[in-house]
Image 1: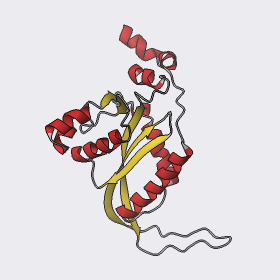
Image 2: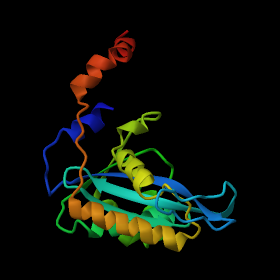
Image 3: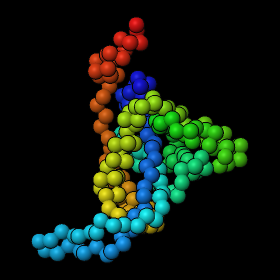
Length: 207
């Protein structure tokens, strides 16, 4: 936990950008009955019944200090999907010496995934682009990507979307707007805050 918080306290450094990564599964839901559109003085009406059209996954990386995000929608979240996303993310930072990547402990979130997606030489070079930092188990709230995924859910994915193509288009439009605004994240929970508010856990370790 303190390692992650220490990273969040660093000043902005384009040579070592701090990027948070996370994933979100999405259900593709269609309407059985056509919704009744809104009219003056009347909200849109939607039937409770819906049809399931499968699932997809939103992969998101956000650089909190610059307000820059990279998002893609895939059918699954396999090691190859992760590897392809990280290759695209690394290409966004060609001048960075190392991308400091904060993420959770999912089994696909490590350099071994690169070797399933690319030849060994390419996988090795890609792995060198990242310094991978993991949030503790049961402490995913330390990953700022969760905050941005929450904003995406409330502002874009708060309705029924029946097709992956449509969902990807709407997520893409939302992403471009957020990047134009340079909407970043201000993280205020520091190592000292942790030591004060979670002192009982530190005391347990000390004992």
